[in-house]
Picture (cartoon, rainbow over the protein chains, first blue to last red):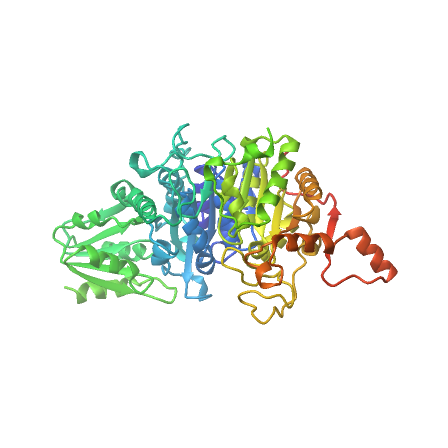
Length: 360
Length: 262
């Protein structure tokens, strides 16, 4: 199965009922598959007039209480940024699949990259936090897409599946379970304020059409949802809660794989470059070389770095100019070696082996 | 119940300037909805950004006050996901015709079963009176200090051409006609577009020799011409004054629509 199709299948397994999207290489197969499958499952597929409208329709659909998603790539992702901020501010669960390609601008439409890792974290204006997952196989395209819906509903935030062209267009054999775990969105208890944090800072969801008469606005709002755009105190409390509800749940969200925890040289990777790292570890068969593979990138699981107490150096191959390696540097005293690669091709095993040699 | 029961009293006072026409339009809309006997639980208001879009915040139903220009795209998502809900959009000339122009024509083309009420005040009111796609040639605004040099959009003609099932225009003077038009729009399956010309004394009138609210409403009364009369004049080769506001029903048809309750 192809990675993009696996992502769509993961969404369907998770009960996604709405897809709004716009064709863009290399993500289009996700939309095409949803266009074929959703109508037969009483779901809605709509091709909107652009990516701004796509994410808007997804947010609108999500407010009726259903699971909704879109899929895109670089240029479309950039267009979505304003409404992604709206989803953050209004605490709208939604899933955004980004099959990353080479940028900036139109760049390399048919080739893979990881250049949007900071954009997904910081791309909309203002301070906020989101959740981003990064699959390294077709199986994970399925599994992590399904999990993305649970996380979106659990924390009422946009959740990003930050894949890339390589994983999206890769074909591998996968196992599709009979059913996936579905943690439904918690409804707002009657009488509670719709935007009061409550337990874990995540309010229950007052879906449209259920008699809540909820006012949803991107303006700074009080616990009732009413605009209070000029109250400094209120704005600070709201933004801090929106950040805290994600950041304080780092452990719950964290998802990573640790290989050779006694290692001195430790690769850290996410997405497609993980495949090269796996090959290198296989070839060298040296327990002094470790691998931390992140399936969840944001919020950054910094405690995972403690899994390698003997680490002397962290080697970070990325298909960008070191977007996550800078984040790692913030958390460790050891040396962090960024191994950037641009142009659309994966690092070769030899390139990474040379990095191991050169950093001994 | 009366239309007053639809308002959130705990949101008063509202932000509209003294003399603003928006309140009249919201009243007419709620009056029409009330006449149809819709429930608050099954009605959703969606809006973008601007003075007109603040309307959703004053109404005691589910409401989605969204980003600038994108209300129709959000509304499309709500309506397709829950066709059993009534979806009504409040927007303005800048929100709908400038930043939201593409969503406008595509929502008309899809003929999504929503009703859109556009409060056209010829200006960007919220940001302090800048020129919009409907600011008349020669009119003064803070960004057209020497008079606008651009042609305007005829929003109704645009909606008709793009495929909306119901299109009409009235003004804040014509409250009975407007409420009736909104009611018809709410009843017609598919995309209904009602343009309501409103006075903006703060952003527009004061710069364009219409300092009194009554002057602006009087201007709309005296310059309004029914579409039937205009068509007759055009047939007969009569003259149509340049500042004419053509009012009435421009189209009512039954093209295939999207998101109609089954």
